[in-house]
Amino acid sequence: MSRRCELTGKGPMTGNNVSHANNKTKRRFLPNLNDVTLQSETLGRGIKLRISAAALRTVDHRGGLDAFLAKAKDDELSNSALKVKKEIAKAQAAEA
View 1 (tube, rainbow, N blue to C red):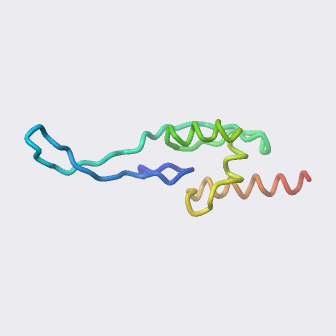
View 2: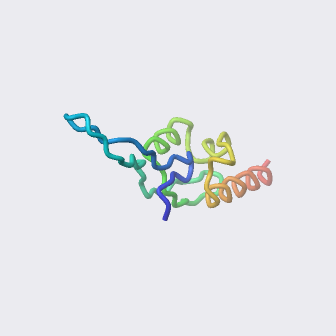
View 3: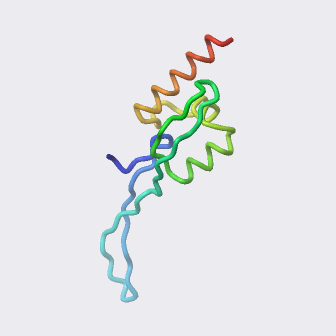
Protein backbone atom coordinates (compact mmCIF):
# COMPACT_ATOMS: atom_id res chain seq x y z
CA MET A 1 0.00 0.00 0.00
CA SER A 2 1.63 3.22 -1.11
CA ARG A 3 1.69 6.33 1.04
CA ARG A 4 -0.08 8.45 -1.55
CA CYS A 5 -3.42 10.27 -1.41
CA GLU A 6 -5.88 8.76 -3.92
CA LEU A 7 -7.52 12.11 -4.73
CA THR A 8 -4.75 14.72 -4.66
CA GLY A 9 -1.67 12.60 -5.34
CA LYS A 10 0.15 13.92 -2.25
CA GLY A 11 3.06 11.67 -1.29
CA PRO A 12 6.07 11.58 1.04
CA MET A 13 8.54 14.46 0.91
CA THR A 14 12.14 14.49 2.07
CA GLY A 15 14.00 17.00 4.21
CA ASN A 16 16.35 17.27 7.13
CA ASN A 17 16.16 16.99 10.90
CA VAL A 18 18.20 19.94 12.14
CA SER A 19 19.64 19.67 15.65
CA HIS A 20 20.52 22.51 18.01
CA ALA A 21 24.16 22.06 16.89
CA ASN A 22 22.93 22.44 13.26
CA ASN A 23 23.65 18.78 12.39
CA LYS A 24 21.49 17.64 9.51
CA THR A 25 20.15 14.11 9.04
CA LYS A 26 17.76 12.96 6.33
CA ARG A 27 14.11 12.38 7.18
CA ARG A 28 10.75 11.84 5.45
CA PHE A 29 7.60 13.91 5.84
CA LEU A 30 4.64 11.54 5.37
CA PRO A 31 1.16 12.76 4.39
CA ASN A 32 -1.64 12.47 6.95
CA LEU A 33 -3.59 9.63 5.29
CA ASN A 34 -6.95 8.33 6.53
CA ASP A 35 -9.16 5.46 5.39
CA VAL A 36 -12.59 6.98 4.73
CA THR A 37 -15.85 6.00 3.07
CA LEU A 38 -17.29 8.89 1.05
CA GLN A 39 -20.89 8.86 -0.15
CA SER A 40 -21.67 9.45 -3.82
CA GLU A 41 -25.09 11.04 -4.39
CA THR A 42 -25.17 10.02 -8.06
CA LEU A 43 -24.27 6.36 -7.46
CA GLY A 44 -26.13 6.14 -4.16
CA ARG A 45 -23.39 4.19 -2.38
CA GLY A 46 -20.22 4.67 -0.38
CA ILE A 47 -16.72 4.54 -1.88
CA LYS A 48 -13.72 3.55 0.28
CA LEU A 49 -10.64 5.71 -0.31
CA ARG A 50 -7.31 6.42 1.41
CA ILE A 51 -7.00 10.20 1.33
CA SER A 52 -5.15 12.97 3.15
CA ALA A 53 -6.84 15.13 5.78
CA ALA A 54 -6.42 18.15 3.48
CA ALA A 55 -8.20 16.30 0.66
CA LEU A 56 -11.07 15.43 3.00
CA ARG A 57 -11.53 19.12 3.84
CA THR A 58 -11.42 19.97 0.12
CA VAL A 59 -14.08 17.37 -0.68
CA ASP A 60 -16.35 18.94 1.97
CA HIS A 61 -15.61 22.44 0.68
CA ARG A 62 -16.46 21.56 -2.93
CA GLY A 63 -19.75 19.96 -1.93
CA GLY A 64 -19.09 16.22 -1.88
CA LEU A 65 -17.24 13.51 -3.74
CA ASP A 66 -19.13 13.94 -7.04
CA ALA A 67 -18.31 17.65 -7.28
CA PHE A 68 -14.68 17.05 -6.29
CA LEU A 69 -14.13 14.35 -8.91
CA ALA A 70 -15.79 16.48 -11.63
CA LYS A 71 -13.14 19.20 -11.11
CA ALA A 72 -10.18 16.87 -10.41
CA LYS A 73 -7.41 16.31 -12.95
CA ASP A 74 -7.12 12.71 -14.18
CA ASP A 75 -3.33 12.54 -13.71
CA GLU A 76 -3.62 13.28 -9.96
CA LEU A 77 -6.24 10.57 -9.27
CA SER A 78 -5.45 6.95 -8.46
CA ASN A 79 -6.75 4.15 -10.69
CA SER A 80 -9.64 3.35 -8.34
CA ALA A 81 -10.65 7.03 -8.05
CA LEU A 82 -10.48 7.38 -11.84
CA LYS A 83 -12.84 4.40 -12.24
CA VAL A 84 -15.29 6.01 -9.81
CA LYS A 85 -15.06 9.33 -11.68
CA LYS A 86 -15.92 7.62 -14.99
CA GLU A 87 -18.74 5.67 -13.32
CA ILE A 88 -20.24 8.90 -11.94
CA ALA A 89 -19.94 10.68 -15.31
CA LYS A 90 -21.68 7.76 -17.03
CA ALA A 91 -24.50 7.74 -14.46
CA GLN A 92 -24.98 11.51 -14.78
CA ALA A 93 -25.09 11.26 -18.59
CA ALA A 94 -27.71 8.51 -18.41
CA GLU A 95 -29.75 10.54 -15.91
CA ALA A 96 -29.83 13.69 -18.08
